[in-house]
Amino acid sequence: MKKIKIILKYFLLIFIGLILLDYLAMPFNGESSFTVTTLYYILFLILPLAIFKYFNVKPNNLLLVVTSIIFTLFLSEILLRFYFKYPMTYSEMQWGWYKTMYDSNDNKISFLEKKSGINNSNHLHLLGKSEFRNYETIEFNFKNERTNELGLRGKLPSKNKKTIITLGDSFTESFGAPYDSSYPFILEKFITQIDTNFEIINGGVSGSDPFFEFNLLKKLNEHYSIYGAIFMINTSDVTDVMMRGDLTRFLDDGSIQFRKPPFWEPLYAISYVFRLFIHSIGYNFSLMTKTEEQKGREDAIKSITNLFKSEIIPWVKKENIRLYVVLQPMLSDIKNVSYDYKVLDRNLSSLNMQYFNLNDSLMKHDKPERLFWKIDRHFNSLGYYEIAKYIYNRFFTNSVLNKKEREAVK
Image (cartoon, rainbow, N blue to C red; front, side, top):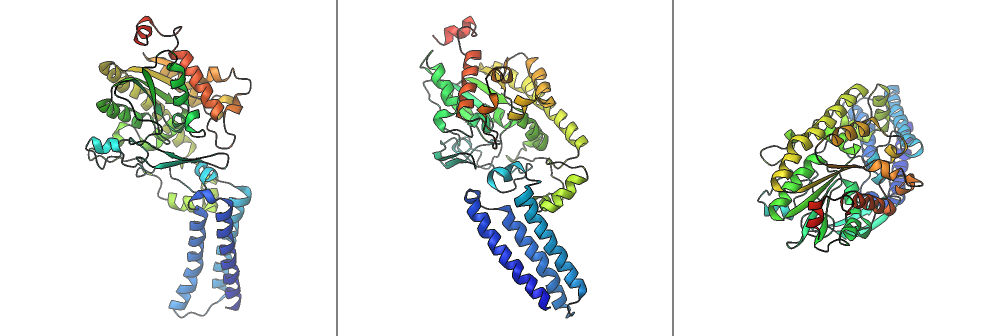
């Protein structure tokens, strides 16, 4: 029993020290999944002691073995998490905590949803209205930007302007740059050189996907006169749709239902040791086998293609909204174009719409990898400037616009 008490004392000292280390090393985390992991290990360590005491059983070699195993596993957690940093998810690399890709309850109600009478709807993936938004990782820090009353970054649409809405995820929101370096802000600067009656509204929201974005476009068009919409698509949308599903995710009661994660995800979230085991038997960070993920990604690409073909293109024609679709590469696509990117390019370019593959233009840059943050992998301010420039030159210059479009901007 004396040995067990000594082990417990050392364990508690290590726990307190690591909590302080975790707090001091990563103050931007908000909360740390390592704290949760440690608490679980303490629970598992105390549990056998409580069982022995409840049944009035004297400590023996079995108890020593159990506590030794738990202590060894915890030390393994420390090594995997802080030294090897494997298997670490993207959210943990950026913010220090595990975030499930299957969560359907992280959307906040905005002014737009309240105005439309949908007080409990998650059919729109938005930020909170008029809340402070920090664009912060270990590489950059752009703090205290307040969202507008729609739950979007930047200004509200005007009633007396020709409004073009940019739709997309964090790359459209321009995570990794201050607002005045975001691609929609810069694009507006370019376009207003042609006509000051135009405005660009940033409709990008981190974690969004084309299905959420189409809902947002329809809702915005109910309250504002939308002149044009720019959808920016990338391969992360394939992952999102694979996890969330297509339009069937939107339920009649105003809620959403994503695909269910495997039952063991909670243990995967807190334990690197368990993750190592899961990966060793063929699962990846998507919590799928290679075969499952390949089929899921193929189905997701088909769903995205069909969304534009069967839903978005007919709808914008009916509403007389100009549609522009941009396929945007990730940092990994710059170095080696992925299979998903190639299939998306082939499918989207075959549709009857104005379409632009950004990769060809970005590859003309001397060192395109310098347009991205190295660890975060979003574009930096220079990257967003280049995106705005290429989109402007492709869609909004007189050399590209047809006669009807040129007359519209005169």
